[in-house]
Length: 387
Image (cartoon, rainbow, N blue to C red):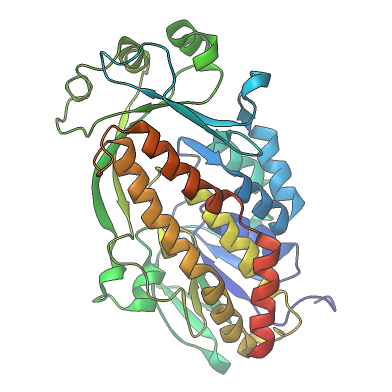
């Protein structure tokens, strides 16, 4: 053990983006950890990730290598005049004004996105594989030696750690343990929305939409879908929308769940903590979920690296400081994302008043994007010093 290494070990449950980024952040701070992943290998399943300015700031706070990994696989708008655009919004219904955008939103980075699998593969290059244990489905935890945690897995194996961080997603087992299986927030909630997700090659998109729409970020506003068949769902939409669907070889329909109905009352209890979707799973309508996961990793790793946290018995105070610094923002983003989905599908009191929809987005989005991660870490450190 090096003189700078912490005298405790963290068990990370789950090897998604939250777990991997947290692990890299701990590694760079000489904090021992092990990842326990229920699958037999890391998954590259997933579609696109939208990474907003706050998420890129959080990557740098985790470690510059995380941001570098993203930049290797990221793409954005190709037209110089639209580099700062997050999206241009169009009415996707037949009969709408043909090629005139309703409005656009922009920020200091513009749309920066990547394929989830490509990003994960770059991150894994930063992570020693001997720190990852596969086929480990957590069953329960109990008090271990010296106040630590004993982890019991479904295969009968038992591991010990000084603390547990649940990064195990929206159906989190660690969340169930933390709040109790009878608590409403132990289960996620259906948002009464679903989404078709798919990808098409850029040349086909250019052929269908033209260069301007295909090579820059575009958002089509839609109405709620109620029929199971894709073409029936989108019957009556503009030809450009239908052509996109025709050119997509595989479309998956995703039911959208979140933790909006029953927010988790605390992200930490004793030496058990949850981050990412395990703590605050969000609908995708603000594209902020991955960013929140990365913010969590940056804040938690920085708190655990604080001089005040030396041994296992100090971790409870660190987890408490994390909870106080992150929970209010995370809950707010989940609710605002739900609201955005309703706005985009014209299910609010604003209806199709796109001017007022634009004004509401202009009020909400900067709060997501302009998050001062360094100031939050500083404030959390002060909170920890008081403990």
